Image 1 (cartoon, one colour):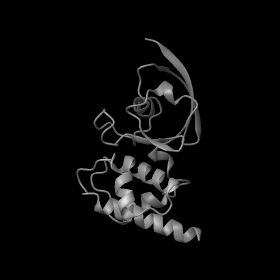
Image 2: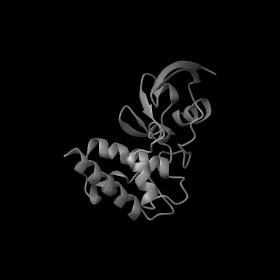
Image 3: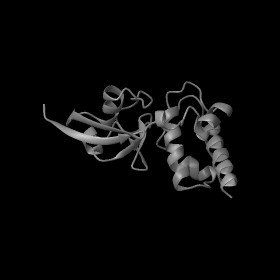
Amino acid sequence: MQSREIHVLVNDEKYIREVPVNKTLLQFIREDLGLTGAKEGCSEGECGACTVIMDGKPVNSCMVLAYEAAGTTILTVEGLAKNGVLHPLQQAFIDEGAVQCGFCTPGMLLTAKSILDEYPSPTEAEIRKMMEGNLCRCTGYTRIVKTVKKVADMLSAAGS
């Protein structure tokens, strides 16, 4: 099996690993790094359970080969909290009941973060549109969308 060496920054930590060319980024993150927040849902890039942020953009890690991530910066759900303090999105998901079974939550959180990083004041309609690639079978999305909007409003008010 052919392999390649990759250098990657994951959650502010540098890693150098030899990876088989057919290993997905999701497999690399879960198996090699032991970060199990990203989940394997559909393995087809349709459900968003495996979403991570790569160089500032959300990606379905099941659709990216690990060697394609060489030289990138990756954020997983494990990297959202800082010094034991939850990210405002994480805390709001808990406070607002936007979490049920939790399977989709890491992908939802990272997609929401990337939305707020790029669009600090999105409307509920814009949030719904931008989160279309993340599926949830439990919540019906209403609480998730309202929670992301609430955090956007809170962060916007704090910044002004």
